[in-house]
Amino acid sequence: MKQRLVISFLAVIAFAASTVYAQNPPFPWPEGKKMAISLSFDDARTSNPTLGVSLLDEFGVKATFFVVPSAVQRNLEGWKKAAANGHEMANHSIQHPCSGNFVWSRNRALEDYTLGRMRTELMQANAEIESLLGVTPVVYAYPCGLTFIGKGEYTQSFVPLISEMFLAGRGWLDEAPVDPFYADMAQLTGMKMDNMEFEEILPIITSASENGQWLVLAGHETNESGNQTTYLRMLRQLLAYANDPENGIWIAPIGTVAHYVKEKRELMAGNVNIPGIVRSATDGTLNLTAETGKGIGPDIKYMPEWNAFGWFTGKDRVEWDLALEKGGVYDVWMEWSVSDKESGKPFVLISGDQKITGKVEKSGSWETFKKIKIGQLTLKDDYNLVQLKAVEDFDTGALMDIKALTLVPVKR
Ligand SMILES: [Zn+2]
View 1 (cartoon, rainbow, N blue to C red):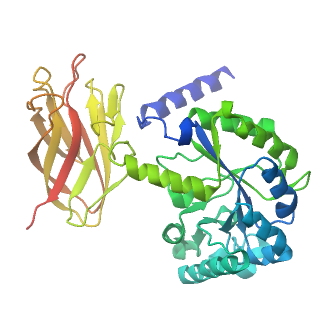
View 2: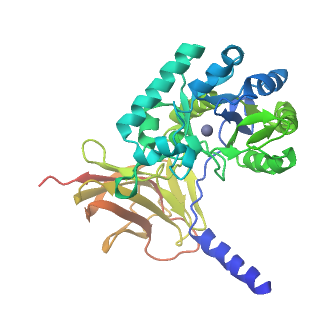
View 3: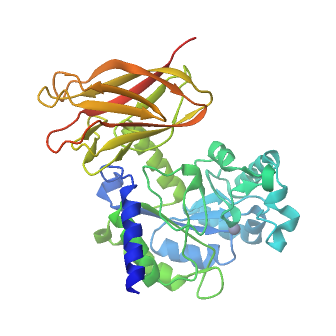
């Protein structure tokens, strides 16, 4: 037992040393709320428009229903009423295709789909939902949580299609809530609420609240008991908890929250750190901004007001991942600031076995950013890693504030 503890402790250290923490302010949920919750129910199950909707309506909470049109027809009046009450009606495909490992799905196995067939059926589902319920779905839930089509070497993801056709796509049986700054809207995580008691869900809510996240819960039937059922007793407790202003929860349908998140992201663009792979702009330039960089080390800080990284020990570094269609030679421009007092420390830019070294020249002040060419790099096709750090360790003072590296292709 003791030995196991030691091993897991070491594993935690190894993990922490390579972890990148985005250093952003808390996500600005409306009215100072701490987190968002969306409730969603799949398949247009029998108990949804009756027991489920009446309980939701009792608490004045709107949910998202991912419906299959043929199932809606079994209680069309009930579903029309749910839609009229403001519940979101969303797309869950026309015939619920899953992997052929589910024998019931073998006549419509994802393994036998093409992207064209998927697009046609998604459009058909949208059209049928529109004609039945008078609303156009803006979000999609992947049946069985599966995002692929084809088999083996023919396998493809249809996430890009969902990204193109919908505001958001939701998974199933995921293990973490949505990070509103980082998440791919086409792959929102969906965490299970079926067959769970409120005591089991509360810790997930508490943790999501501490991290300012968006918890998207997913279920099926809404009843007292049964398989694939969100228990009404759990739902009642959850709704009361979410409605208590003390708990700082914004509870709204997926489409509503997705729209809000997208809008906030656009407003904050350029002033949040969201590490992500850098791709060439249309003119071939690569913009390695602080916004997309990874700050790694004991004392590196992303400063949203400057969209710059500031670093304060020799052990800190910034890294960027790059995806290039084609490699080539690039002029490297650096945009930085430094106080006269801290200027002059040597830095190094590393990519593969290439290094550009220099001294951090005076920019005038911490508030004045300057941009100069520091050298050239030859980048490979596809993936490249670029690192910027101090040449030697130092204990006091600072290296510089870095706003961006701009890599401009050299015309040959
Ligand atoms: Zn389903």
